[in-house]
Image 1 (spheres, rainbow, N blue to C red):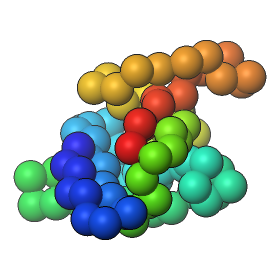
Image 2: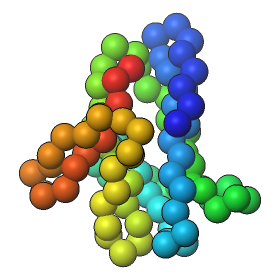
Image 3: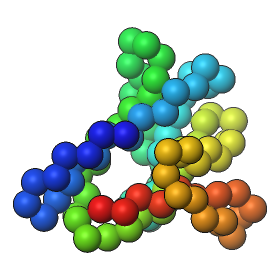
Image 4: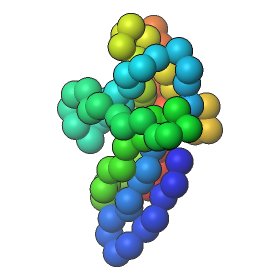
Length: 91
């Protein structure tokens, strides 16, 4: 994950490495948990860039095309009401 802060916003590039799926989406509080398709890099990683307000925390996760929920291992996590874990991004 890469974070660039400017003024009251942050440009956050979310990246996930997986060889188990040819499609990946991110879902988070910032979009009402709506799936946002991620793009694939030449090396196979998936990524998406979001511009988010600073001073907030955001819960999110990744979902592959099988519907499997994946938390970001580099960030703190908390239990979700669905029996999985959500990642927590503090900006």
